[in-house]
Length: 91
Image (cartoon, rainbow, N blue to C red; front, side, top):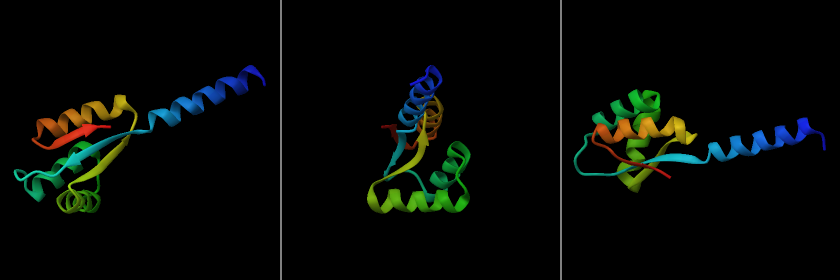
């Protein structure tokens, strides 16, 4: 195996690991659907339809993965969700 192939394999593995992080939003009895939808659009770059679907999943299932990606990308987004009063964590 060449050095170039080895480096590429290591990059592929690191990228795969980076994408395994998820922000999960949990249901609560405080936030309105509109607030959750608006927050997901603003913080997670959701479309209005995507945000509405996630809010319904959170309501009926108790939780929903709203964003996946690298920890470095998700950490400020999760903090913004928490600052907006949503219950969220990175897993």
